[in-house]
Image (cartoon, rainbow, N blue to C red):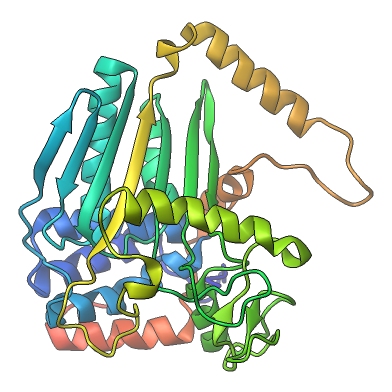
Length: 355
């Protein structure tokens, strides 16, 4: 992953600047450049490196090939009370999903809950970027997306679901949000690519070869295992939840019908769907009661007894620690990403992120 290294680090501001500049130079509008960069920087800032700035080169390839529309016209196609459906016009997934969550928050401010389905979108990076956006505005945010098949079923031996992330962000008064951001696979596929770049072995029981046999060799990994190890049927079922909300409820493609993220064809949009929810806590309970409940919950959780040499953390706690460190020290870009940055800088005549 992108590790801190005092001798060879890049500031988050420099990475942000470079990513925005590349998107604009490649022909994307400023809204796309902003949303895509915000999502990637959420990943890099919080230690979700598989969904951070290492995705820049991939997104530019998709933009140049025609898979991603860099100047989309996102439109509301249905609206009923607290429910909307957006057609993203093959926008970058981050622009589509930030737009949808903004709309869901607006609906929740009026109705207590807002639900927005997204049609014709694309890969959106870290799901937590959108849920936390709602949480920081005082709402509970929930995000679903499916993706191209790369995860076998429990006891299965074919690619069936995508990594199909689920994310939930909950506001906490006076503190960072409670944040769940999880793939329903054992690990995300982008982590396999990252480990290939770093020459590292995969954790046990996270990936399989083409016959469904477990492997720790990132280069031999042909599919991922569902979350849960020996109880992988639970992860497979959670992947189905994301599938239903993202594809079936939006009328978009199921995981096994989506074109592979890695190509080779980048000329056609992938026809993906996603789904977001925003919930206003005050619609169910007064805010003081809600805030007190969350604070009490986290206080007891974080001070609860632990096993020897262990530490209990709430969802999101690790991310806040990593973000604070990286704000101070920056990050070191992995070799494959650095090479991709150099090629993009040369192609578009841009200054590399300063070390």
